[in-house]
Image (tube, rainbow, N blue to C red; front, side, top):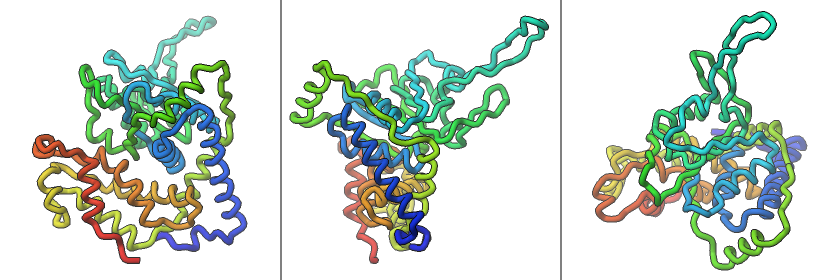
Length: 341
């Protein structure tokens, strides 16, 4: 496990980097708050995804400002933003780009020229990702894992940093294609956007029906985001907490010896080791945003559900009893005793 010495707050250089990280995060939230009302937990999870270099699946009802939220965050980060509207007729080449034949007007020679697709951005918004067939959805797989794409046998590196923020509508299922498990597993979070409170909806109406248009300013850069990603990985986590995360993930697998009875009854397949990696990374980022220099138990429990909810596959017993993954995870967190410090 990482040692305390890796993130020594008494180090002048590290202290400066930590203060800059916290200042930038506060500035991002300040800019986004000019446009987006409420959704504190969702914003927190999206920023954690960006700060650890992960991808985020945003599940929300129509009109909950999913696209506006992602676009606004991209503006504050000073990154190249690309939006892909997923439709049933979208082809993989519409995402990755394609080779075209160009003719030199002076010599008449023809050659293949690669025209990059919208995936060549820093933040790629995959809007309504479940509206396109699996063949096209899979065009994102290599990009999300390897930060590269292959077109006609040629390998192209993507810009760094690179994030996929995908949205999907949970209620309109006609004409949609559920995301394959392998693709779901590559998303750090599945974050849920719900309706706002009545008071927040009044604020939204006031903001969007007046003549004033909010001007969002850039508060950071690509280079600084990459530095933050390295800084977060230096945050230490105790051995007992790391073991707790691993045991929590293993308990989601119905064939493991540590799975409780309700998991064995309702879960077909549990989470992979990637879930444990993502919980630890997310917890490190959350600790730093809360001005702590080490991971705490509350960081793990706060992020376990959005990391795991799309990684456990329930069976027909769960559907029959109207049990969803969030309920399974709530019971699991109650079942697992906190680690002894």
